[in-house]
Image 1 (cartoon, rainbow, N blue to C red):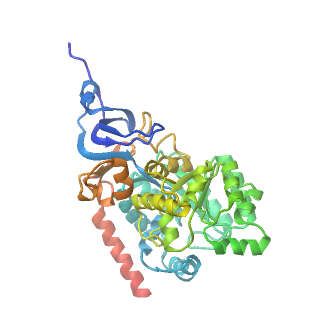
Image 2 (image 1 turned 120 degrees about the vertical axis):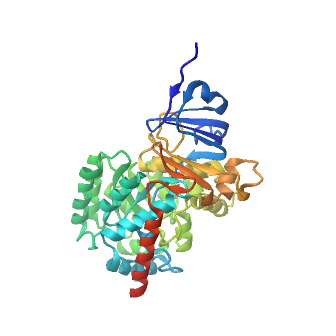
Length: 443
């Protein structure tokens, strides 16, 4: 009597799988089985046919499977400002160039087209989940829904008016509507996005604290990004920004602190005591000369550190592979310790740590049974990966985005042989060219 095998939605055979599990395994000649968007098992490829069959069977013998990369901080629509203002320090870049450009150009159409361009780039470099903080977040959320990526929409909150809202109360009011519109979406989470301590006063922050507790929703904020930020804050009220946030009651496991380049031991203790998360953006910090986040010290203290690209206007790439590599290299140089952040830890920063920071680590961030099938496949037959002694080392220190061949989100194939299946690349690039022509003509 022939044994009946279970029908799977898809089976992926791979030369190697790094699941990012507590055992830090690298599996060779293994297969991953997906049913209804979830990973049901990982097992040796030689065994898979005995237990499962599928009409959608991918054979990738030269590929490495990893959890989809998680970009824990960015401003997706700002991809349309890529290269607009370079080689400038943060505040000059922001106040003299970016804020004026936003005032002139940002509208719903800009956000839709810029978000699509960002998602196109992120999928082609292995990112399955991203956090976005930008204006017209409802438009961005709809674009994400249509592309079927996973996303945290952190709606912005500032004291001053922009194209999207008039004041802090208006930002919060409009943001709360997102919970009604997208709160039940499987792939979209809503978070509060107070821009920074220097752009949001105490009263809105206190309201955010109350609402985030009631809704059990994350809060993402730019914090301790530059030395100038700390000098200005200390001159204003003799407190470091994180001390002010602590006294307000904002520090909690829901808080995602972005950048954090200027930290002393007391700051790190506050982060650890309150189980806050740090989102490290190494390339953006380097380009703006903002400083070096001490991620080896944070990691050693038990603070969860995730990775983000920031926006393409200040990076100028949305390449999480590059962020992972530079995070590891910077940590070694800053701490004067070549083993400070090893290759597997770097991969954790870009996957499971990002999931923890966004509060979705029970759903994604690793390739384990019961989790969503958010997967990136990387071709290790490329010249840049030869010879291949250690697939993990090659991934972190040598892999280029062009080696990402396939990406799945929630079990759905979104990138196949480098072609996006839910995003029209030709149209998106055409729209980007159109925006560039208009912006360049008015500079």
